[in-house]
Image (cartoon, rainbow, N blue to C red; front, top):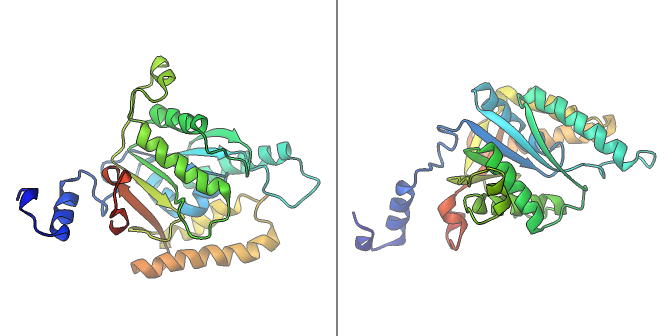
Length: 267
């Protein structure tokens, strides 16, 4: 049926979704590599640890793109920024290994100071072009009441980098370096209040918590006493939404709807 024959938005919207190569109910179909963008060294594990474990167990490669050095994550006045940054990177390597992640790119911007600039956007684009993932995941920058600047900036910068990575005239230095433009069919947002896809992580929940707990500089015994229940409650919340015990929620948006789309929230 031709689109000019549709009389209602609902008919046209349904037909438009059918025309897309990307299907929200099968976001990882034919995916061989996923790039997970994280503002700090523990965010991929906290936000998507169960999903990442299930992906790597199924043979899909997951690569981390760490944007900041995590050097502000302490209340201990005796720990320097440099010392904490080194500690957190080592914790990240150990955590990633638990989840089956073998590669981490680090941009090393200052924690709490991730700039929302063209330069950072270009660096993210360069990593996308190097890795050529079929899917990129990032924090949802529109999570209500999110108080951390790095999280909001990470989501916006990641989204824009995906939008521009397929444009040959964006960051011509990549072309000179032999990197080709790389387009993606969709993006996925974790740490989201409006998920449209869920991953059952019931059988890998303990592995996720183990990967988070490795970040000992962040989760001391007293902190973990509160954060373990917090993380279980978040997983139960997504589980309640999806009919599982524990789940992680992701909001996928097809690339077509990442520009001038008034109905993106309906997806």
